[in-house]
Structure formats: structure tokens, C-alpha cells
Amino acid sequence: MDTHLCDELLEEIFRRLPPPSSAAVSLVSKRWRRLLHSSTTSLSLNFPPPYNPTTITSLSTFLSHHPYLSSISLSGGGDPLLLAVADSCPNLRQLRHPSDPVSPFALYTLSASCVHLSSISVSLSRPLSFHWLPSFGSLKSLSLSFTGTSTEADNLEIEENRDAFDLELDLESLSLRGILAGDSGLSCLWRNCKNVKKLQLKSCESVGDSASFSNFLKFLNGIQELELRTCRSIVDSVLLKLAADCISLQSLLVYDGGSKEGLLRFINQSKCSLKKLDLRLPLDLDNSHLIALSENPNFKNLKTLRLESCCLVSGEGLKAVARAIGDAVEELALINCDVVEREAGLLAALGQELGKLRRLDLSHNEMMADKDLVSMVVSCDGLEEVRLRGCGRLSDAAVVAMVRSCRNLGGVDVSCCGGIGGEGVEALVVEAAAALRRVAVEESKVTGLAKMVAPKKCIHFVSSSIGFSSNFL
Image (cartoon, rainbow, N blue to C red; front, side, top):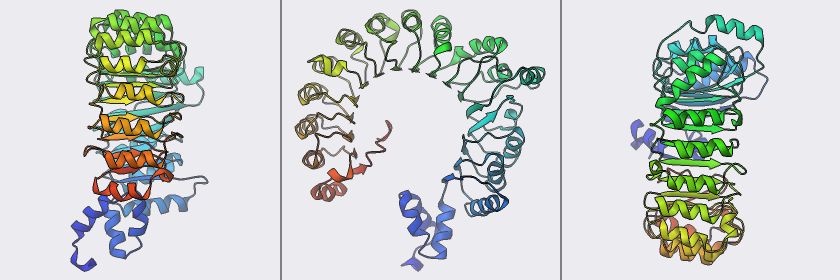
């Protein structure tokens, strides 16, 4: 059979195989191993220390056998591994090397060898320098983590050179982690990234020195997506700037750090037509924010509302939002929000207002009862995705009722639900409509009948440790 299949057909077959099968394929024959390498476009490699010349040579040789590699993720190694990639992967489009810091020299070398790179994720040591950025002409997405301490001498050195280039970069997505107060050089970055539509700030106590902050505020005007994770010291100033001047913002995420007053002023004064709001603010979000959200006409087209661990929210605020914008909301997440368990009848009331709901995430509400879930899904019969991970009190009966009511279900996550067993998973698979494609659940709960029926209906079981992403359909 091997001799009857041409190289191109085998390569296409190998591309469609799940990753665990790759090791077995490479053992069949030298031809299959060669074709497997030539069909591989993505690799993830972990290199623990020590790093010696033999390791680097071996990596270069290994990579040279993958001529069409377009995406690679490296863990460890710093400059030596990055230089090996630059030497062996001319067709690279995406690079992730976020662990060990790399030098400007290595990045310059990478830019000269991998001219098609469009996405880079690396770590930089202080003092910060961005002179290498203009050399990546195809770059669209950049993710940087900053390490080390900042000294006055470092800042003076960068201060003298921060205006060395003034070239508007064509970045569309920018992610920065670990900015410290007084970090110089960032002004140059903000000034030359005016086209960025998606900005992520993680564990940042500042956006740089005073000049950087001034440029940053101007930079915000055209942002469409903003994520602030563990950035308590800058959240208020950023939100107030957005409320005053930004009308382009469509998606806002704030996790683990904010203030009640700053968030309330943003919601009351915002002029943007927000489509997605994602908040994890256990002690900084309450009903006043939700009621303000329901009263601002600029939020009438909100399609996604995600709340996680928001313990000060009550049914009053959620019902006000549902009444005001229920016709627009397509995705609702109430993750680990004890209001779901605390107020009986809340989910039923929300279900009656959210007629266009397509995605529902009620994960980690451990005490949520069957009747509460069923009362909601009966009203939201257009649901396409339901996540119930960690809802330990739910039983098989809830699963059966859900699958019978929601005939458009494409994905269900019932992992880590102690009350749901093999019978529930079996009923989910057997009684599901044709739309169902993925079920996240423990392998031990998949019965023999479920395993037999699933392939016939094109249903795939996903590891309970992985779950599935929101764009799995």
C-alpha cells in the first residue's frame, strides 16, 4: 500500500493526524519519517539546562529536517536556541520564546533570516531597548515580557537613545507584561504603534515614565480590544481616558485589580459601543455597576457579558442588565458567582430575557441545582455551547433535560461534575441532535455505547483537563 500512495497524499494525511500519532508514523519507514517532517508546520519544544554546543547543533539539525515549519514554541535556552531557529527556519511565521530573555543582537539576527515573521512572543531584560523592532517588516503581533530590575543608570542610557527611530510600525496586536514605574524607552514604543487594535497589559504597575504615559494616552484612542490583568495601579487612569476620548473600544477585560469608583465612572461616561465585557473583580464589582451598565444606551448592543468570582453581585443587577440588553446578548458567563446558588429562580428569570443566547458558561458553581439549570435552558433553546465544568451537584437528569431542549448544541463541557456519570454522558451522545461535535468529560465516564455511537455522529471527546476553546465550532 505504501508504494501506491504518492508523497503529496501522504503529507496531506499526516497533516490531519492528531499529534500523538506522529511518533508512530515516524517509525514506519525512512520515507514516512521524511514526509512527516516535511508536512510538519508547527512544533513545541522544551529545552531544560544545561545548554551546550552539542544541544544547539542537534536542534539546528533537527529543525533543518522541517523545511516548511511556520510556527515554533520554545521553552528555555535564551539566545543560543533563538539563533539556531534563525539559522534553520527561513519560512517561520510565528515564534514563541517567552521564558529566557533574549538579546537585541539575537533579534536582529532573527529578523534578517526569518523575513516572514508576523507574530513574536519573547522576554527582554532591562534596560529596555526597541531599536530592533523596525527590522521586522512583516510583524503584526508582538508579545513582550520584561525581566530584571530597573536602575537609574539603565534609564539614563535608554533615555538618551529612545528617539533613535521614529517609524510607524504596522502592529495590530501588542501584549506587554511587567512594566515598572519609570521604565524608560516605552515612549518610543507607544509613539510608533498607533495602528494597534488589541492591547494586553499584564502585571504592570505603570506604562513607563512621564513621557511614556503621555504618548500612551494618545495611543489609546484607536484601541478596539483592551485587556488589563493584575494592573490595579493603572486601571483607573486607563479607564477614565477610555471613557473620555475612545469611541472605538469594542472589547474590555479587567481581571484581578481595579476600583469601584473608576469602573463606575467608566460605565457611566463611556461613549464606546462595547460588544464584550469580561470582568473578574471579586471585591470591586457590585450591583451599582450592573445597573449603570443597563442604563447606558451605548451598551445596548453588548453581545458578551462574562463575570467571574464576582461575589458582591446580586440578582437585582443581573436582571436589570438582562431586561435592558437581553435582545443583544449572545454569550453569558457566570463563573464561580455564588449568586447563581444563592438566589433561587435567578437563572429562570435570566433565561426568559435572553432569547438570543448562544453560549452559556456556568462553570464552578458547585452547588447549582438541576432545577435551576433546566429552568434556564428550557427558555434558551437556541444554545450552541454550554459549559458546566466543576458543577458538582448536577446530575444525569439535568444533562438529559438540556440535550432534549437544546437541539442546536455543538459543544458541551461536563468535566469535573461529580454528579454526572456514564449514564448522563451516554444520553448526551445518543440523544444529541446532529449539531453536537465535542464533549469535554473524563474518559472514565465514556461508556462502551457512547464510544460506539460517537464516531457515527462525528462527536469527539475532549480531555477533561483541556476542555475546549470558545471558537471550537
